Length: 332
Ligand code: SAM
Ligand code: SF4
Image (cartoon, rainbow, N blue to C red; front, side, top):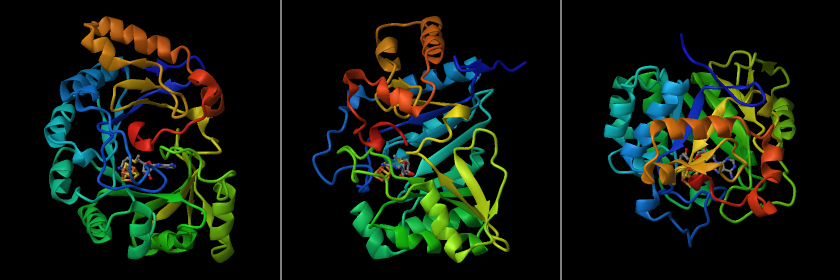
């Protein structure tokens, strides 16, 4: 019988998000500063062997879903052999990927062959110039080609759109309308202060309520869909549309009560909440010679002391400093 992991609040934990690198070929405004990024020295990143050991151990403890994220996962050399290896792990039911779509296209065929069916593609605008303004790179056409190929191949496709005041709110409706003819889900994410610099705005202007109100002004007949268990998004459909849309209250943190996920950062830090500053470093333990049993005990202890929600996790951060690291070093 499958083992189930629980945290100290009785929440089942079956999902790990693994950030395989902090490097990226884009410089999204909300995620990284344009210049002066301090990448983690290469030897400080988890090696593939260390990542494989971590995932294999977590799967033996009851985790059955992994999301590969970053940084940009496809920028790390030899990502495909790594995916090939973990796709063979017995007990790992799902490997999902979050990518910016710039260098993903040549890998789609093999991803599909490996049984990977669900990809989240980050796309904040359908306007080429605005794409450049947001990501600071001119690769809109490549991303759109990736999107259309993913749809043609039958990947379960989610688009991640960070809603930014004064930057892309004019894109909300065109992005919703992508779901008219395409079977995909566009998910609007509240901007969080994870940009390597601190908060862009003193107050979040576009929270989940405002995003929905904005869509309802044009589509008053929006229908609420039942949210799958552990969903971080509120999900909706416009009658007659093939696809759906969702809203993720990432800053308002309305979903903590059913949070089933943990994170491993590129440096090997375990985070039991997006808003904490790390519980223990898996890589350091491994490099100091820890056995699997010792690692397992450390994971269990961490889950036994998990913050109740993202607000508590943020309050408990060391030195009380607010969140300001880049999402690429956390794994969004
Ligand atoms: N490079 C890949 C990508 O962009 O899809 C994967 C890593 S990225 C850090 C993962 C997700 O985090 C992306 O969908 C991105 O939009 C989201 N993200 C990054 N910074 C964010 C922020 N400050 N607030 C909300 N979401 C953010
Ligand atoms: Fe790179 Fe993804 Fe961050 Fe954009 S959101 S800078 S694509 S890691």
